[in-house]
Length: 188
Image (cartoon, one colour):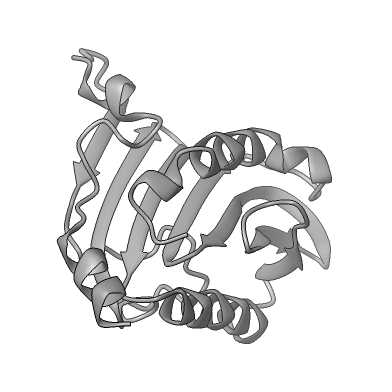
């Protein structure tokens, strides 16, 4: 157990490990688009229904976050977080699921579904704007996946209409690609 904790504490998420890091590093003169990259261990979860800074912080050893923003209303995020143990990462996934159930308003609701075939456990999280009880334009679609002591998060925000399974196509593809290499830095 001690060797696992030491390994988790010493392994860093290397630069260019995330899928979109090369795109984020390219110079972009378009004032309506931007990338931000961070290796801050305390970065807020990119899938965070309650928008609470403390969600998912306990037990972290490393984090890497990329966010792409395009004006007026499109964003995508990629985040890999390493925790001190698989149990700590599993607790965060359960906490995200609890946040889905407890947060939201009449005009913006969240839902989550367990997604089979991704990592040790995965959730597809939908945030959706509603007007007069019907899906309106606007929302978030994210996948949060645990593999060993790692969490992998992919989120897309934009002008979504009524939620559909196809809304998660790119996030699922990205998650599968990251799962193929996450065990090189995580304790799987």
